[in-house]
Amino acid sequence: MAKVIVLGGGVCGLASGLMLARDGHDVTVLERDGAPVPESLDHAWEAWDRRGIAQFRQAHYLQPRARAVLAHELPDVLDALAEAGAARLEWARMMPPSISDREPRPGDERLVTLTARRTTVELLFSRAAGAQDGLDVRRGVSATALEGIAGGGRLRVTGVRTDAGETLAAHLVVDAMGRRSRLPAMVRDAGGPDVEEQAEDAGFIYYTRFFRSRDGTTPAYLAPMLMPLPSFSLLTLPADAGTWSVTVYIASGDRPLKRLRDERVWTSLLRACPLHAHWIDGEPITDVTPMAGVIDRCRGMDGNGTVTGIVALADAWACTNPSLGRGMAMGLVHAALLRDVLAQHADDPPGLARAFAAATEAELMPWYRGTVALDRARLAAIEAERAEISPPPPGDPAAQVRAALGPAMMSDPTAFRAGLEISGCLTLPQEVLARAGFAEHVLAVASEHRGGPPPAPSRKELLELVA
Image 1 (tube, helix red, strand yellow):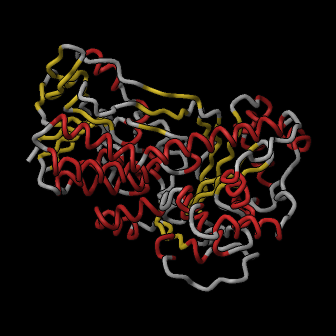
Image 2 (tube, helix red, strand yellow):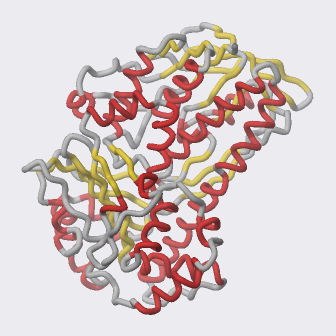
Image 3 (cartoon, one colour):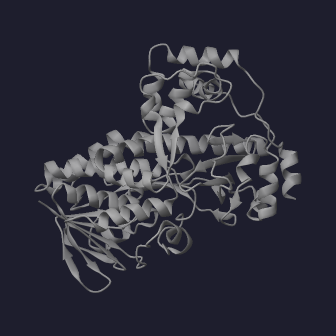
């Protein structure tokens, strides 16, 4: 079996290490943050110092696809989440009141998930990794350089050098260093070619606050989890131990709305949104925490044989706008793909690179491209609202169906489930839209149930609120 070094001990790095170790490989995880694993969930939330993860205490969500991967690959971690009080969301039972047909249907079990705060999820992965034979997690150790054989515009990675001066040999190095990965510079410094990269600012700023239940209940959903409204969007996410988060996100160029970092302004905005105001009635357990500079980025480890012995995993390969909650789901799927590819190509670095690139392109690239397209469309809609102009209507039939799906989800159980399949990373949008009769059904439902915009402040009222 292979000797594997994983760079990065976040959720996806640890998940990859666990899957590979359980497949019989000898795995070492290097995590540069040296803080020890906390003993309790409360200590993890209050004091765990994870400086390498900017969004460590921002909102996180485990999509149904992520739960499915855990159930199949790491059921002990899923069980630990349940025992830790992760929120269990059975979306087929959480339809809006406007849907009258609420009978269960085959496949509803796919729409179930457990979700928790990032601190809780990472703590439970860390505990599983610490108990796993064949998996050595070294905290406070960073890889400063790649070891390898370079020449002719090619690089074969054979290991890493650490900040302690140690050289560690490996059959495979896995870059799981996340959004801040230094992979392109490390490959270049080792004598390899430039790593192709496509990146663009997602164009959003997030303002998040966490709450804890005062009576043990979680706020009811009166609107979708992610709700686009004029000039801003609202994201409401249950978590573990009776906690939840509320996030307002805006276009990064909308200077007046940057006053939302002020707790009083943030609270006033939520109070002015009737379908969401009850989400801030709990006990606040954080201040309003901003996050900016979020990018959509994809790195072209394309399997052409120029760089072998190293692969980019999860956010180190492609990172996306976190409001859609796809990061951990895509990362866990990616880890399982790597485990499968390594089982077939452990002794063939070029074959491994090609196979992993092909699997990534087939399974994950459509989700990445779809996320970027949604980011662009949402930003364009916000900018149109700010400019007081009507956005152009959807130009092609598929876009028309996608635009109609949101309204149809509020009144039709078939559309509701289909939308959840897409948002939960279970089925690609183009596959859902290709189902016989589905497009016609959604368009008909949407035309019959045309309602007004959801209750929320107008642009003028919003500017008065934040003034």
